[in-house]
Length: 127
Image (cartoon, rainbow, N blue to C red):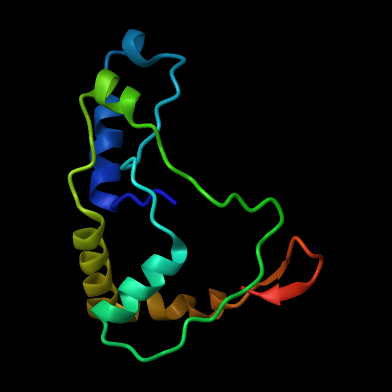
């Protein structure tokens, strides 16, 4: 998957909102980094950054699961003069820090951690 830090996303949206309409009307503009990082790699990086010994739990694929998402960011650069500025590692570190500093805000949503999903194999698993 192509992971984009939220500040970079917001800056790109600001560029879209302020672009001349005749320049972007009807265009499909991907916002991303053009760098693909697997979910497993992210889980391992989070474990490392948080010095965690928790196991990584694997679950089945959702129906229609796409195994690789990587954006072509050419149009974003050409039409908006925009490209992501935040490295994946820096964005992940900032995200972890935000969650550590804002537990009161996200703790209310913990019940959403486990939702039943029917996998591509037809089995219902908690995701």
